[in-house]
Length: 229
Figure (cartoon, rainbow, N blue to C red):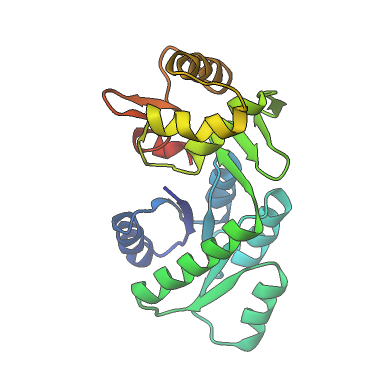
């Protein structure tokens, strides 16, 4: 589930917009001003920021600059101003798009999907709570420390990541890791590797929240673990 930070000081806009996006399958956090928005941005990982230019507490331009200095998270400006210089200034600061108020929710949703789709293609990295996955380098770290996954552990983790919110059967996982292992992988081996993987990625391997067991079906990342993304 993709996570959005909405920084908007007008509750008449922020509340119905957050509810709409939640219904569309996004997890939305709201902030009324720059200070609260930067605090949430620093504490969590977001796939997109919706940022109002005119804020009672600070302004969208300075908030965008501060955010871009921390992470290259996509930003869409929400602006009530049709002035060209506001739009140009926002784009020059690194914003990915802008939507002028008043806007139709479906139009904004289309812009959100386009920006997040472009960003997924551009960056092969992912944050899951305190886990960071760099797919280009084949590295997984936790709280900034490399977990040093083996080739088979990484392959198994990547299969689950690439099928987030889907339950993968043990047979499906065995078929996928067989090619990567280059050796015979049986059901017991899969159990061992799931255990090893959980010991590295989970805070409490006995009560996993990243790699969940769906009894009678298999394993998955997502669903109850949606707050990780």
